[in-house]
Image 1: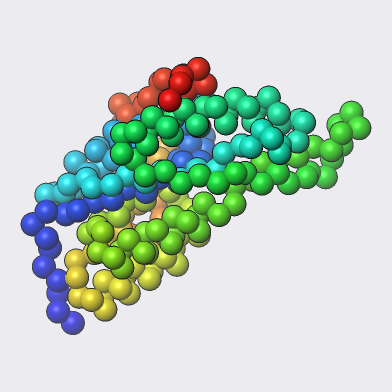
Image 2 (image 1 turned 180 degrees about the vertical axis):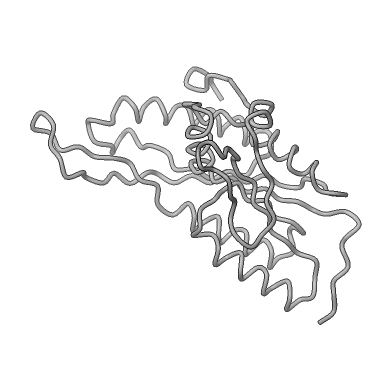
Length: 217
């Protein structure tokens, strides 16, 4: 098989699994809001790759639907719906590509004060990310995809991208950017691809401390 030549300029797309990144940062650093700036984080990881240029930033997240959520989540849902609507609106105005899907509310097997308790679950986000990174690779929209997620559900799509690379004999790669905090058990990214560690110092340098619950987009 012919070894493909590395492009003079590596075109990079970044893909953010927002909830996966947020929960990792919460576990590692104790932050209670998804206060990462995806543009700053993208610019940082791209700066770690020789001769690379950032092309597109994609952000994916589940959001609350206050109209449909159970009563025990109503106030929380209103807050986070406003937060994400404002944050994503501003990011969209900056050119970030946005994908959202309403959360699914699943009933827990417990009753508090005669009320059934529900919890929100994110459905379909990992599938959309997997489809996008594979489709964008097949369309030739990037040379390097950097995925901000440690969700193993993305592995089949990554393996297909490797097959596409070998079939077309082109330079094409996928990296994993992840929160690195060995003290909290966060030491490894997705297997069989290169890793870009996000330490607390790096994360803090890329935080956005805007209160999006009180900002008009």
